[in-house]
Image 1 (tube, helix red, strand yellow):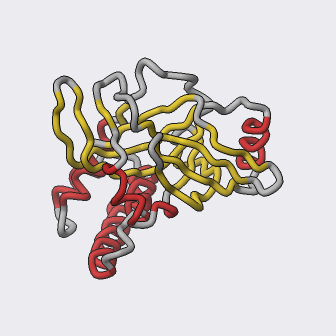
Image 2 (tube, rainbow, N blue to C red; image 1 turned 90 degrees about the vertical axis):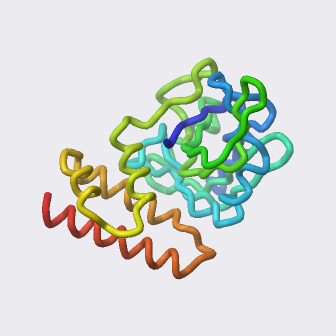
Length: 219
Protein backbone atom coordinates (compact mmCIF):
# COMPACT_ATOMS: atom_id res chain seq x y z
CA UNK A 1 0.00 0.00 0.00
CA UNK A 2 1.30 3.42 -0.90
CA UNK A 3 1.05 6.04 1.82
CA UNK A 4 1.86 9.70 2.37
CA UNK A 5 3.83 11.19 5.25
CA UNK A 6 4.13 14.91 5.95
CA UNK A 7 6.99 16.82 7.57
CA UNK A 8 6.68 20.41 8.78
CA UNK A 9 9.34 23.17 9.15
CA UNK A 10 11.90 21.36 7.05
CA UNK A 11 13.59 23.74 4.60
CA UNK A 12 17.32 23.40 3.99
CA UNK A 13 17.92 26.10 1.36
CA UNK A 14 16.20 28.23 -1.31
CA UNK A 15 18.19 29.65 -4.24
CA UNK A 16 15.86 32.06 -6.01
CA UNK A 17 18.39 32.92 -8.73
CA UNK A 18 18.90 29.32 -9.83
CA UNK A 19 15.38 28.17 -8.94
CA UNK A 20 16.66 25.39 -6.68
CA UNK A 21 15.07 24.35 -3.38
CA UNK A 22 16.36 21.86 -0.82
CA UNK A 23 14.16 20.37 1.88
CA UNK A 24 13.72 17.45 4.25
CA UNK A 25 10.74 15.21 3.56
CA UNK A 26 11.25 12.42 6.13
CA UNK A 27 12.23 12.41 9.81
CA UNK A 28 14.26 9.52 11.21
CA UNK A 29 13.93 10.62 14.83
CA UNK A 30 10.27 10.20 15.75
CA UNK A 31 7.44 7.88 14.65
CA UNK A 32 4.35 9.27 12.95
CA UNK A 33 0.92 9.33 14.58
CA UNK A 34 0.18 5.85 13.24
CA UNK A 35 3.18 4.47 15.11
CA UNK A 36 5.47 3.99 12.10
CA UNK A 37 9.12 4.99 12.20
CA UNK A 38 11.04 5.45 8.94
CA UNK A 39 14.71 4.75 9.63
CA UNK A 40 17.92 5.92 7.98
CA UNK A 41 18.77 2.53 6.52
CA UNK A 42 15.28 1.84 5.20
CA UNK A 43 15.71 4.35 2.37
CA UNK A 44 19.19 3.35 1.24
CA UNK A 45 18.10 1.12 -1.62
CA UNK A 46 15.80 3.70 -3.20
CA UNK A 47 18.39 6.45 -2.89
CA UNK A 48 21.23 4.29 -4.22
CA UNK A 49 19.12 2.99 -7.13
CA UNK A 50 18.69 6.41 -8.71
CA UNK A 51 16.56 8.61 -6.49
CA UNK A 52 17.07 11.54 -8.85
CA UNK A 53 14.40 10.01 -11.09
CA UNK A 54 11.71 10.83 -8.56
CA UNK A 55 9.11 13.46 -9.43
CA UNK A 56 8.52 16.64 -7.41
CA UNK A 57 4.78 17.24 -7.26
CA UNK A 58 2.45 19.83 -5.78
CA UNK A 59 0.14 18.31 -3.15
CA UNK A 60 0.75 14.76 -4.48
CA UNK A 61 -0.95 15.74 -7.75
CA UNK A 62 0.88 13.88 -10.52
CA UNK A 63 -0.61 16.33 -13.00
CA UNK A 64 1.36 19.21 -11.44
CA UNK A 65 5.09 18.59 -11.71
CA UNK A 66 6.96 21.40 -9.94
CA UNK A 67 10.48 20.32 -10.76
CA UNK A 68 13.10 17.66 -11.23
CA UNK A 69 14.81 16.03 -8.26
CA UNK A 70 18.53 16.52 -8.90
CA UNK A 71 19.71 15.09 -5.59
CA UNK A 72 18.22 12.73 -3.03
CA UNK A 73 20.12 12.04 0.16
CA UNK A 74 19.96 11.46 3.89
CA UNK A 75 21.79 12.39 7.05
CA UNK A 76 21.30 11.71 10.75
CA UNK A 77 18.21 13.95 10.82
CA UNK A 78 16.26 12.63 7.88
CA UNK A 79 15.94 12.23 4.13
CA UNK A 80 16.15 15.29 1.91
CA UNK A 81 15.64 16.28 -1.71
CA UNK A 82 17.12 19.00 -3.90
CA UNK A 83 14.78 20.09 -6.69
CA UNK A 84 15.43 22.15 -9.80
CA UNK A 85 12.11 23.93 -10.20
CA UNK A 86 10.44 24.13 -13.58
CA UNK A 87 10.27 27.39 -15.53
CA UNK A 88 6.55 26.80 -15.97
CA UNK A 89 3.99 29.02 -14.24
CA UNK A 90 3.61 26.42 -11.49
CA UNK A 91 7.36 26.29 -10.93
CA UNK A 92 7.73 30.08 -10.86
CA UNK A 93 4.77 30.50 -8.51
CA UNK A 94 6.00 27.89 -6.05
CA UNK A 95 9.44 29.56 -5.99
CA UNK A 96 7.78 32.85 -5.02
CA UNK A 97 5.91 31.06 -2.23
CA UNK A 98 9.16 29.49 -1.01
CA UNK A 99 10.86 32.88 -1.03
CA UNK A 100 7.98 34.41 0.95
CA UNK A 101 8.12 31.62 3.52
CA UNK A 102 4.67 30.30 2.64
CA UNK A 103 5.81 26.71 2.05
CA UNK A 104 6.88 24.97 5.24
CA UNK A 105 5.56 21.48 4.73
CA UNK A 106 6.68 18.65 2.47
CA UNK A 107 5.52 15.10 2.05
CA UNK A 108 6.45 11.92 0.26
CA UNK A 109 4.58 9.00 -1.23
CA UNK A 110 6.05 5.73 -0.01
CA UNK A 111 5.44 2.02 0.38
CA UNK A 112 6.49 -0.16 3.31
CA UNK A 113 8.38 -3.20 1.99
CA UNK A 114 9.82 -4.67 5.19
CA UNK A 115 9.41 -3.84 8.87
CA UNK A 116 9.48 -5.19 12.42
CA UNK A 117 7.75 -4.30 15.67
CA UNK A 118 9.41 -2.69 18.66
CA UNK A 119 6.66 -2.53 21.24
CA UNK A 120 3.88 -0.42 19.73
CA UNK A 121 6.14 1.04 17.03
CA UNK A 122 6.43 -0.42 13.53
CA UNK A 123 10.03 0.17 12.47
CA UNK A 124 10.71 0.31 8.73
CA UNK A 125 13.57 -1.84 7.45
CA UNK A 126 13.00 -1.07 3.77
CA UNK A 127 10.68 1.40 2.04
CA UNK A 128 10.18 2.46 -1.55
CA UNK A 129 9.88 6.20 -2.22
CA UNK A 130 7.52 7.06 -5.06
CA UNK A 131 7.52 10.87 -5.08
CA UNK A 132 8.04 14.00 -3.00
CA UNK A 133 5.63 16.93 -2.78
CA UNK A 134 5.47 20.54 -1.71
CA UNK A 135 2.31 20.99 0.33
CA UNK A 136 0.14 24.05 -0.23
CA UNK A 137 -3.43 22.80 -0.12
CA UNK A 138 -3.68 20.60 2.97
CA UNK A 139 -2.02 22.66 5.67
CA UNK A 140 -0.09 21.14 8.56
CA UNK A 141 -1.49 17.71 9.39
CA UNK A 142 0.97 16.99 12.16
CA UNK A 143 -1.52 14.81 14.05
CA UNK A 144 -2.58 12.75 11.05
CA UNK A 145 0.41 12.55 8.71
CA UNK A 146 -0.45 9.24 7.07
CA UNK A 147 -3.00 9.39 4.27
CA UNK A 148 -3.76 6.39 2.05
CA UNK A 149 -4.19 6.58 -1.69
CA UNK A 150 -7.76 5.90 -2.69
CA UNK A 151 -8.33 2.17 -2.81
CA UNK A 152 -8.33 1.56 -6.55
CA UNK A 153 -4.98 3.32 -7.04
CA UNK A 154 -3.42 1.23 -4.28
CA UNK A 155 -4.83 -1.97 -5.74
CA UNK A 156 -3.64 -1.12 -9.25
CA UNK A 157 -0.09 -0.53 -8.08
CA UNK A 158 -0.07 -3.63 -5.86
CA UNK A 159 -1.59 -5.96 -8.44
CA UNK A 160 0.61 -4.77 -11.29
CA UNK A 161 3.81 -5.07 -9.29
CA UNK A 162 2.91 -8.65 -8.32
CA UNK A 163 2.47 -9.80 -11.91
CA UNK A 164 5.15 -11.35 -14.06
CA UNK A 165 2.97 -11.30 -17.20
CA UNK A 166 0.01 -9.29 -18.37
CA UNK A 167 -3.12 -11.33 -17.75
CA UNK A 168 -6.90 -11.29 -17.70
CA UNK A 169 -7.11 -10.50 -13.99
CA UNK A 170 -5.26 -7.22 -14.49
CA UNK A 171 -7.57 -6.17 -17.31
CA UNK A 172 -10.62 -7.00 -15.18
CA UNK A 173 -9.17 -4.90 -12.37
CA UNK A 174 -8.75 -1.98 -14.74
CA UNK A 175 -12.16 -2.26 -16.38
CA UNK A 176 -14.06 0.21 -14.20
CA UNK A 177 -11.25 2.70 -13.61
CA UNK A 178 -10.41 5.96 -15.32
CA UNK A 179 -8.13 5.19 -18.29
CA UNK A 180 -6.06 8.39 -18.11
CA UNK A 181 -5.38 7.91 -14.40
CA UNK A 182 -4.39 4.26 -14.87
CA UNK A 183 -1.91 5.13 -17.62
CA UNK A 184 -0.44 7.89 -15.44
CA UNK A 185 0.07 5.40 -12.60
CA UNK A 186 1.69 2.84 -14.90
CA UNK A 187 3.99 5.47 -16.37
CA UNK A 188 4.98 6.51 -12.86
CA UNK A 189 5.86 2.88 -12.09
CA UNK A 190 7.84 2.74 -15.32
CA UNK A 191 9.83 5.85 -14.39
CA UNK A 192 10.91 4.22 -11.14
CA UNK A 193 12.11 0.87 -12.46
CA UNK A 194 15.52 0.01 -10.98
CA UNK A 195 18.35 1.33 -13.12
CA UNK A 196 20.79 -1.32 -11.95
CA UNK A 197 19.12 -4.36 -13.54
CA UNK A 198 18.72 -3.72 -17.26
CA UNK A 199 17.10 -7.09 -18.08
CA UNK A 200 14.51 -6.67 -15.34
CA UNK A 201 13.87 -3.08 -16.40
CA UNK A 202 13.36 -4.08 -20.04
CA UNK A 203 11.01 -6.91 -19.07
CA UNK A 204 8.88 -4.75 -16.81
CA UNK A 205 8.82 -1.90 -19.33
CA UNK A 206 7.60 -4.29 -21.99
CA UNK A 207 4.75 -5.42 -19.75
CA UNK A 208 3.80 -1.85 -18.91
CA UNK A 209 3.72 -0.93 -22.61
CA UNK A 210 1.53 -3.97 -23.34
CA UNK A 211 -0.92 -3.04 -20.59
CA UNK A 212 -1.16 0.55 -21.85
CA UNK A 213 -1.73 -0.70 -25.40
CA UNK A 214 -4.48 -3.08 -24.26
CA UNK A 215 -6.15 -0.33 -22.21
CA UNK A 216 -6.17 2.01 -25.20
CA UNK A 217 -7.56 -0.74 -27.44
CA UNK A 218 -10.19 -2.17 -25.09
CA UNK A 219 -11.34 0.90 -23.18
